Every structure is written in structure tokens, then in C-alpha cells.
Image (cartoon, rainbow, N blue to C red; front, top):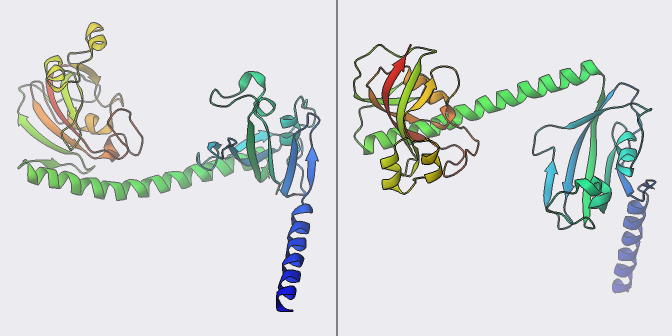
Length: 312
């Protein structure tokens, strides 16, 4: 009896679950895309209003290649009931309402159009899409929304930078101690060592400085240099760069944002003929971006620099 009762309960639960799933509304576009409302909203946009939405697009193997969540920025479209609905995707997007959450999958060529299928997907491969409407806003509301988002992101980035600077500072100070360097720290967090004093006037904002340099990671890896002999010695020599005259002092208009902040600040501390070492925290270099090559996000960078000339 107990076993029979258990089976009956299991069957009842399955029927309830199936009933819950089957009650979700499903519609089909004119070109055959079947989409399901995970949740259906009620408030349709008016002409001129903006529909904000989050979008996730996955391959048939569930690999995400588009995500507004990862980009930290929702998509949006301005609603106009006179816009032509040429494809099923047009029908879906122009039919979005506040509160909608929609899921569907279809052939890539139907989703993107035959001429716009991403190179890494086959035209007949199924693509999975999830759309969630964030809000429906007026022009003013849209501007307010994105302004608030930018302010929030800026605050978060500033907080991350403060924490990262603490980490970088400890790494730099350990390096200074291990290498017996007599380094000076600026208020921003840049450390520098004057290895040879110059004999000219201090470099000022707008001056054109000619700089020989060698850039290293903290483990000693040379990632770039203006000096051909050093590049050959370290195995980083690039013949095409040499052919194009890429070796030689780098011309920098100081203080104009042509280089990373650590360089702009450091160069302004030097004079013509000076040789120095910059120990630059990632917050004054490339931050949490991947700068390419061996420079990973949040990398502390070390530069040996020589000012060969200054033009006022």
C-alpha cells in the first residue's frame, strides 16, 4: 500500500508540474520562430518610448556569445508602431512589453539573416535566445537611467581601484625591498628611482620628450623596448618593426594622455638626459584590461627610461 501511495503522489506531482509548464504562453512568428513567455508583461510601449531589455544568446551547445549582463549594459530600442516587421525577430522585438521574459531557439540564419550569421556558427545551427524587458521609458527616463548606471559603475570602478592599488603597492614595496632600490612614492601611487640626473629643465605639460625605454613585468619578462640591441638580446626583436623604423626613442607629448598615466606623471619628474625607473601600479597602467601579449589584467609594470631629448 505504501508503495502504491508513493507512486500515486509521484504521478500527481508530475501532472501538476506538466500543467504548470504547459500553461506558459507560446506564439509563432510569421517565419516560424516559436517563442515562449516565461513571464508575460501587460504594459505595451507607446510611440517614441524606449524598451530596455537584457539579452542572452547561446550556441546549440549552450556557449554564451552575447550577453548584455556581461557587458553591464542593457540594449534598448525606440518603439514605433509604423516600423516594418520584415522578419520574425522584428516581430518579437517590436512586440515586447514591460515585464516580458521570452525564451526561444531557431536556426542561426533565421535569427541573424543569411548574410549576417557569425563565422563560428553554421547557418542551420540552432541558436538559443533569452530576452527580458527591464523597463519602458521616455527619452528623459532613458537618459536618467543610463546616467545613474554610469555613476554607479564609476563608483564601483573607483572602489575596485582603491583595493587594487593596495595590492599593487604591497607588490611594489616587496620588489623594492628585494632589489634594494631607493624609490620615492608619489601621491597617486607611482614609485620612481632617479638613476642618473639630467642637465636640462624639468619636462612640462605639452613638451615633446624623446624616450628610450624597456618595459618589464615583475617577474623580469621584457614585453617591449625601444632599443634594438636589447630586443635582440632578450629574443623580442621584430624585423618588421625594425624595417618601419620602430626602434629608437619614443616621441611623447607629455601630459596629453598619449601614454599610460604612470608615464605622464613620471616623465614630468625628469629632465633631458635623466635615466630613471618607474614602478607603475596597474591603476596607473592598463587597469583590469587585457593589454595584449604578456600584460595581463591588473599587471604592475616596471620601466627603465632615458630622456634623450626634450623640445619645448
